[in-house]
Length: 249
Image (tube, rainbow, N blue to C red; front, top):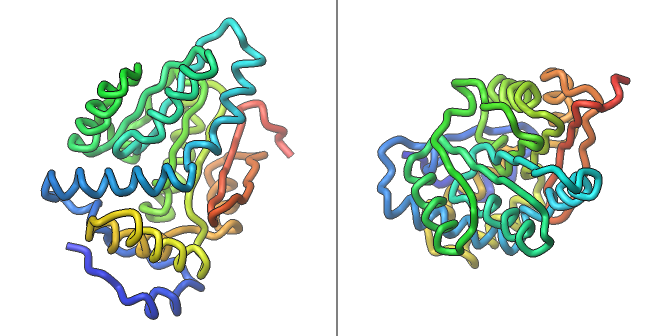
């Protein structure tokens, strides 16, 4: 079981990435506690508008391909809040979308499926190990949100390579930036927006395990994502975007 690390310790160690075990990543986690944590994370993601960073690319594809259905896969989708947000966008703006999500956790897949059905959204979720097996193909856009910071560098590089190999057109990766500001915002936000002790522990640990922008650029280069674009946005997040037709220089 992962343990909380005092804020001053995390604060003093942000110069180097500290990948510590998180409660959500532990096997045998109580299903009710897991669901409570996923719901807490969904509230935080809604407030920070995590899914919104993907919308411009979705709209661009729709405007350039008005007669085509856009197929999207969210890797490590957790409770499915990003999938649902994208599905709502398609329904609201009349964009023809087919949105899928995959996660290694059966509990997360069950919760995501139930939440989508409760909203009447057309979304499909399935169990998959994004690191241990190739990703399925046939998706124009493959995304992942707030997953990269859970991974060792070698696994993060492998994930980027796998996403690039599977996508028909574009890869997008959204995650935290390791910084003192993000640690402070996360520590406060997890306590204001969730009662889950798992979220209270894992949120600050996630910041310690997050990458800085130069480290993200190095991962993208090592994974062969030549021409990847990395942008920064509030609150202390980044978006990596790579297109199959990106310039080679």
